[in-house]
Amino acid sequence: PYYFLLFATYFIAKNLKKQDYQLLILFIGFEALVGIFEYFTGISSVIPANRTELLTDKQHLMYYNRVFGLSSNSSVFAYKILTAILLLHYLKLNSKKFKFVLIILFGAVIVSFNRTVIVALIIFYALYYANFFKKIAVSVINNRIRRDHLVLAIVFTLIFAVIIGFFIIKFQDIYVQFTRN
Image 1 (spheres, rainbow, N blue to C red):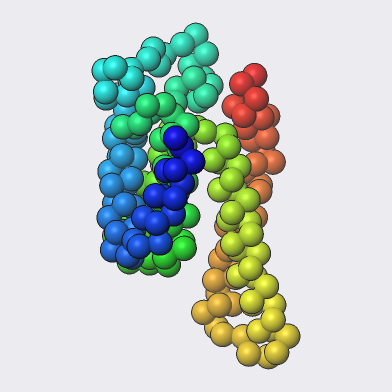
Image 2: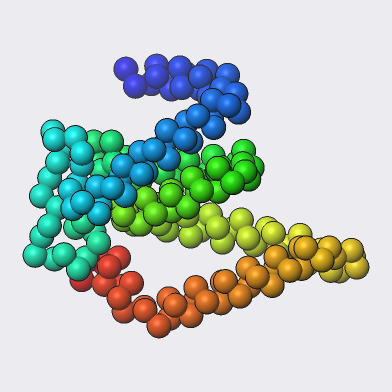
């Protein structure tokens, strides 16, 4: 029966407008807020039927403190967050409201601690910014560099260097988190 739903999904996706996607992103942003709330209150889900024991003897590992948001498990929650982040970039939504939603979504990715989504986002942003730096390199070669692009390239390079430095310094802790010790 699921194969027939693929046709319905395709038809619905082809007929959605930008406003529909924006509303979907806002709903997922609300679910992200619920997930962050769950994390800080120490419960896995606000829905009693989905609630599991969150605190374990391995509390220092984020893997065992994952939250479900309004979903049936943490994986579905994390995939919704990934979808919303990708939609934000695909639709090029740059208003302050959607930048705030993006920050909330990043927080939800951390509290859901879905390793697949984290790695997918790392790869996505590596490709996203590699394309940005390619455009800057082409403009430098053609002597048409824009000042704002150059400033952005320097800022992103510094941020990237700080992140890489953090990963090098905290490699052991990050390795323990991703491999569950």
